[in-house]
Image (cartoon, rainbow, N blue to C red; front, side):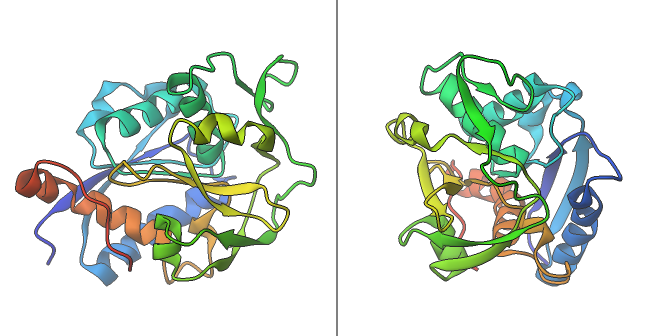
Length: 247
């Protein structure tokens, strides 16, 4: 049995109408059994996010926008990013991770999300030209990145349930401050983002939790769970977190 357990915060406004919310608990339970992990999983509504999240070993910002509290979602990301807590953001989690980074790291404090403030002057998250709700699409993965190491391939087919994405004209703003876009669709639009200097920070516009029939976890979900389960041990042994090995 793994010597260390992990406390996971599933941040989102739980709903029976969001497919990933129904899929994730069973997926994590099977992952615990298969990989002999010890995971204590807690649902945290966006309106309840506060500094108590610092006590978790992993933070997953789930799909399900618009969130009841955008501020809560942004705070969850900031806590994970600044305090080295393993972070996974999927679908709306990707969108809000880009918002948090642009506002808090890049100094673009006025950027907004087109779903909640469509008439704002400075939209970072905009409607996709073609909705990806319920669709699958190919991802081209950049060699040498965490995403490539985990997938073991430079191309992957992934499932979406979203209608908003990052304005591609703003990529340089984020890149210049350290965000790495490690996966793109065939049109060249970003679909995976990561922070190489962080112990584990990965965001995807697609939903890896919906891959397959749920019997075998997506490599991103598996790596995130391992990063969280091993975090306390890494803190004790090395004084810092480490990037998980490819699985």
